[in-house]
Structure formats: structure tokens, C-alpha cells
Image (tube, rainbow, N blue to C red; front, side):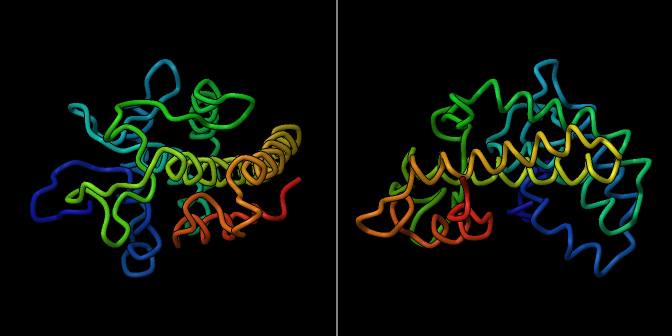
Length: 214
């Protein structure tokens, strides 16, 4: 949770601290329980909410709900639990299917609540929750499409581990194709920057090897 003095919900941005927790504590059962909460909260469209458990609506975006994909993979990576990964894989794939429904020609479009439904890097210096100077729609779309590439990569690796060769190739190809579309849609060649040129929108594309896309 980002505000432990006041938050009491299992917000999905807790995924960013998974490695920190695992390196310091034996959290296999804890994270398997939380991953189960995500699976239980998934709706019929494949969407994960922004918190799990999800007693009521809360803000976030793909980087929150995507925890339902990221967490089973991290559990496998650090604890080697292939059986849990296999049982989680269908719900992980359904979430990717949900994101495809929110995409146009493979590129994820802005969706959800205008203020809190499609957050990207929502608290960069000088911006965020307590500022009226929030990042724009373009920056949010860039961030969340980079995140979609990340999820494609995870699904591709999961499928490889589980011996699902066709799925592995499919998600790897989708990741590579989306990289090219991010380049064509969000890169400003004249300025040599992505989106508004601020740090998150330069580092995330580099982390996902977006410049190396098709």
C-alpha cells in the first residue's frame, strides 16, 4: 500500500515491493493467498479490480489490476511453484483478453474513470494526487502500453515454462508488434523523446526495449 497510515485495501501497486518482501521474509503462503484474492475478484470480462480483496471501487489502472498476472509469475520465479503457476495461467490469460477489448489495433486506449481509472506513473515529482498538474492522456497511454508489453512478456515466459509453445510464440509476437506501434505512436523523432520527455516516459520504454521493436 502506498499510504500505510491510512490505506487498508490490498492495492495492486503493492506488486512493486514483491521482491523486497521475498528477499527479507518467507512470503510464499502470504503471496499465494493474495494471488488467490485476485483470482476470486476477477469478473466475467477478465478484468481484475484495482484492489484484492475488492469490497468497493478504488482507483488505479492496468498497473494495479495487472498484479493478477505479475504475482503468480513472481511466485514461480522465486519459489519455483509450477503447479500454482499452471492453475493461475487461465485467469492471467483472461486479463490479457480484457486488455485486448480495451485496445485499438493492439494499442491499449484510455478507459475507465477519467481521473482515477487509468493511472500510469501517477506521482512523479511535482505532480500526482495532491497537484493539479497531472500528466496527460498521452503519457498515461504510453506508460500503460509499456506495461502491456511487460504483461505479454510474462505470459510468453509462463507459457514456455508450462510447455505451451503456441501461446509462448503468440505472446512474444504480440509484445514485439506492440513495441513497434508504441514507437510509431508515441516517439517524437524531432525531440528524440517519448511523450512529454519526462523521466518515466524515457526509462519505461528503455526497460521494455521499445526502441528495439519491429
